[in-house]
Length: 177
Ligand code: C2E
Image (tube, rainbow, N blue to C red; front, side):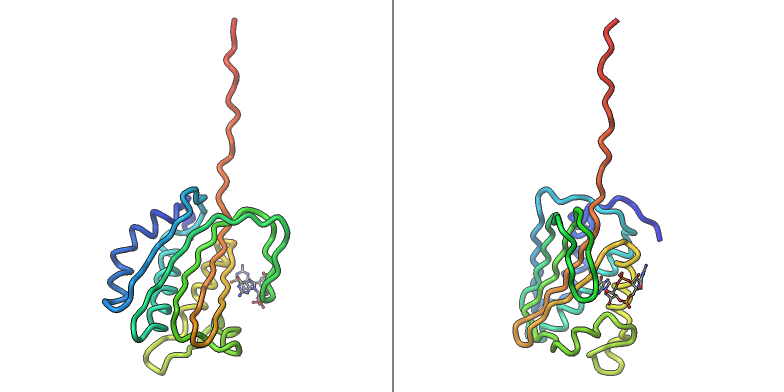
């Protein structure tokens, strides 16, 4: 793990070319960034893997084409947020949503998507390691990953990553002699 200060807007624009190739011609990718997006601390390569994985899953949910949206936002939690069995502590986060309007994941399967070796894909198509790997990477980064889905409407994967706060340096006052 090689954590560094990362601006997700840069990471995503560096990846755009590759992501567009991954999704193919029938699928469009739209990006929307918070203009004031905070930085995070993460292993850039691993984070790229997570984003690629989420985009490939979204693409696979769109066999007839469609749009995948990636939205970055700053999120301030003033109270603990409980979701699934996780409790997200109050603080500043960077949220990344990967949204598709695809086939959707049924509720009983949604709970299992982060488990190792779980896959909805046919044998040979997926290894089943994708989302559990993504989960592991996000946990190591101190973040969270959640999935929301409605069959026939689409799926949203949400990453919450702790914002990297720049410590304000004390600027010494000029001393007059
Ligand atoms: P769980 O998956 O059975 O994890 C139980 C505890 O094991 C976690 O407590 C955490 O302390 C540790 N743990 C599990 N996986 C990892 C990992 O990959 N890295 C690290 N460093 N620790 C790990 P915690 O965090 O209080 O979570 C409680 C339960 O909440 C988890 O049970 C899981 O069901 C859920 N949860 C936690 N984080 C997430 C998340 O990011 N997304 C989703 N969907 N569920 C989460």
